[in-house]
Image 1 (cartoon, rainbow, N blue to C red):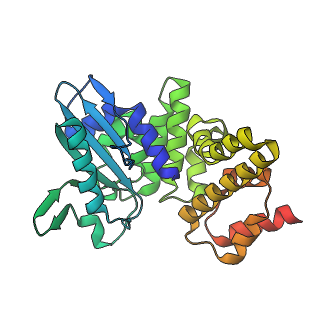
Image 2 (tube, rainbow, N blue to C red):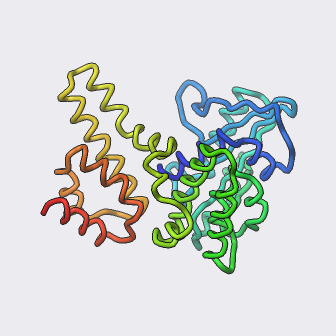
Image 3 (cartoon, helix red, strand yellow):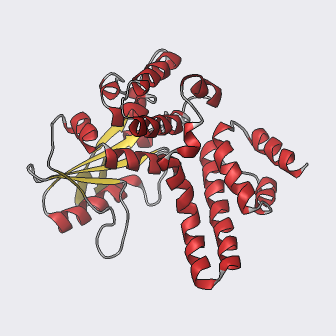
Length: 292
């Protein structure tokens, strides 16, 4: 979810950069469309309408190729719903973020007995980083691009981020870069080039945390402060477990039981430091520290 929210934010804030990169065209008459499609909602990652060209750019970002339902069927489902709703040309692009040898990242169509549906596939680790280094909204993706020297590429991205003049934009792009770089770089290396201190203050990171608390807060308004705090804690717990699973893989049942005992404040603290974890041992050490 961290990577989804990061990339959705980038596409919504910098749609021209993605259109220029993926469609090789300039567009100023852009409308960001709702991502809930039709009456039985399913939510796409990004849907952008090029009004003059009467064309939709639909993006899906995948950290891993596994998907339920399978990604080809999802892409067909998205296309049908978009076409029925807008009746225009639709360009669909799936961007895989994390290197893998899975054959699923080469599948670019859905096929059944009477139906074939095609879409574009981009394996970002095979892409030339140079076009991505030219636009602020694409800099975070550049950290995942093809390179013989990952450290030098990360340094290049950090230099480009530092050259952004508007401070709020620089901060947001820096945070998005740190979050996506975490897919392939160790935290220590990321901290050499990008300031971790910006994370706590950033709008995009706070949005990720807020999403996990929103349901609990609403329940608190309706059912009382005490129940709202517990709902918030449970929402934060689910968010933290999802983030840990993204970062470390599956969490064993013993550690999950210990996480269940944490307070809301402790879960919020864990949500801020877990990006530095590289193994379950780091999580165990953190839990031992707060329990002593």
